[in-house]
Image (tube, rainbow, N blue to C red; front, top):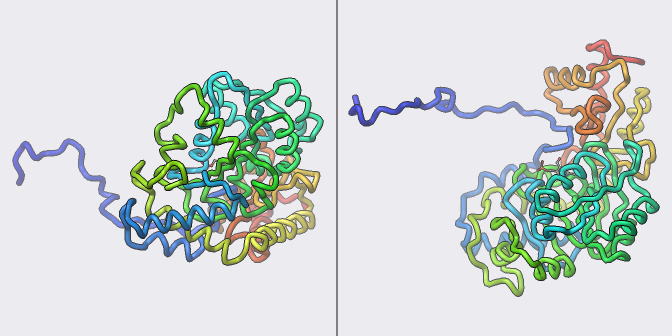
Length: 396
Ligand SMILES: Cc1ncc(COP(=O)(O)O)c(C=O)c1O
C-alpha cells in the first residue's frame, strides 16, 4: 500500500494495459491509403537523434526526392511534420500578408478551406468557380477574375478530392504569371498520380501530403517555394505569424543555401521522415512516369467497370477527371452511406461518401499508391455489386 500522498485521482485505463490491435482494411477512399511494405518496415527502424549526421543524410535524400516528385530545382524544398493541412498553412502563412488579394479556384471543399485560412491571415479571398459541380475552371472565367481583382497569389488544388476534379495547372499557371500572380498548387490528392511539372509550368509554390499516392502514414507534408515566392517572403512588411512554419526557420533546419548551417528548429519527425523517404524511394524505383501511368490505367479500368454496372461518374468531361479519386454518382433511390457501411462491415473495404458539395451525391473511390492496380479495381467492383444487391440498392 502506498502513502496517501501517492494516491492518484485518475486510474490508468484498463484498455491501455493491453497491446493495441487494429483490423487490416483495404483503404480505397480518398486517403489515407495502404502502405507499401518498404514504408511499413521503415517505421520500425531504430530512432536517430534529429541532429545526427545519419539523419541529416536522410533529410538530404528526402529533399532530393521531393525535387524529383515536384520536378523542380528550387532550393527552398523541404518536408514538414504535419499533415496536408500543414503544407497548406506553411505555404499560405509565409506568402499571404494582411491586405493581399488571393484568387482561389473553388471546385470543392479545399478552395473553401483555403478561403478560411486566407481570411485568418487577413488576406482578401476572391473566388473563381466553374459554375457546375464536377467541372474544372476554364481560361475565360479565370482571366476575368485575374483582370478584375489583380490578385498577388492564386490557390488551386490540382486534384479536388471532394469532387474528383482535376484542374489544368499548366493553363492556370501560365495565365496567372502573365498577371504577375504567384500560383500555389495543392497536390495533396494528385502528386504521383498525374503529371506535375513545377519548373516547366512556372508554379510559384506547391505542397503535398504523405498519405495518398505516396502511401506513407498521414503526418508529413512536402513543400517547395520558387524564387518569386521566396522573394515575396523576404520582402514581407510583417513577420510570419507562425514560428513553426516560418520559411527561414525551416530553411535553416534543412541546411538550405543562404539559410544554413543546419541548426535546431524542432525535433524532426524521425520515424515519419523515414517512412516518407521510403515512400518516395518506392516512386523512384518504379519511376515517376510509370507511377503516373499505373494510376491512370487503374482509373480508366475502373471507369469501364462502373459503366458496365450502369453507374455514372460525377466528372462527365474526361479531361477534368482525377484518376486518384473517382466520384461515382449515387443513384437517387440509394442512400450512399448504407452501401459504404456494408462494404466496411462485410469486407473491411473503405469506399467513402461525398464531402462538402458532393455530400450525399456520390461515392468516392480512391486508387492510390499500392492500391492503384486492376486487381484492386476488380475487388472493389465485386464487393460493390454485392453491397448494392444486399442493401436492396441494386438498380440493374
Ligand atoms: C486536395 C487536398 N488538400 C488538402 C488535404 C488535407 O490533407 P490532410 O487531411 O492530410 O491534412 C486533402 C486531404 O484529403 C486534400 O485532398
